[in-house]
Image 1 (cartoon, one colour):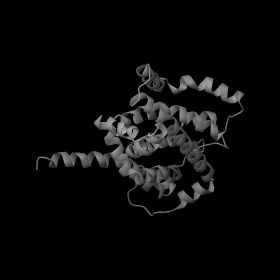
Image 2 (tube, rainbow, N blue to C red; image 1 turned 90 degrees about the vertical axis):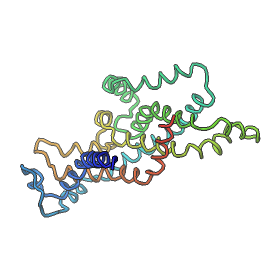
Image 3 (cartoon, rainbow, N blue to C red; image 1 turned 45 degrees about the vertical axis):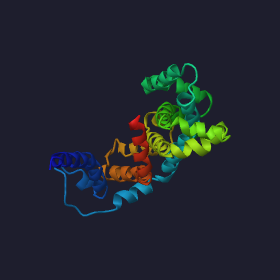
Image 4 (cartoon, rainbow, N blue to C red; image 1 turned 30 degrees about the vertical axis):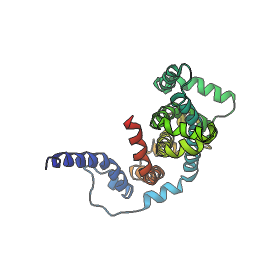
Length: 267
């Protein structure tokens, strides 16, 4: 009985956070008149007009650009972050504290302060409105966070496990591939999912460095806010469709995500 108030409070907080998502999904099934009504309409005739109009505006290329930028940047981050975290945790290199501080300090730089130099460099390279530019940028943005996360997971690995592998004659690469990675796979999955979500949701650099060829899903959503008005039902339908890949990825990786985040929390 002592836990009942906390259980009710937890459910209330959960529903409060979930309500905006539910409202967005419901609004996507409304007509524009119902979506814009004040006070809000709770009883309405569901329609798929909003979703049809979203697909008529050719959502698919934007989703593919977001998927490509998020997926490739996440893979690149994992490839770079894992050996870096290994060197900063299990085999500490010289000045490892300074290196860790440098990595995290890059996250304190406001994005707007870096926009102009990045824009000029990308323009000189002829890579404006190029999805590979976003892959590189998203990798650079997520790499410090991934290194810190992977380091906390690697610190959970008992040193005796690595020592046993070395005594059995396993080299560095074999120890990492056959011993370390299976142990920290939940943490690896958690890191990958968080990097994927951050890349998928990124808007600031996408809106300034892309246009039509490499436009990502958040750029597509902005197109519904125009001088002609705010098309709320279509915007909510598009936002629901854009959110589905991230929700699906989180649902598929939920067990690994919980285990991975728990590993990091213990340390």
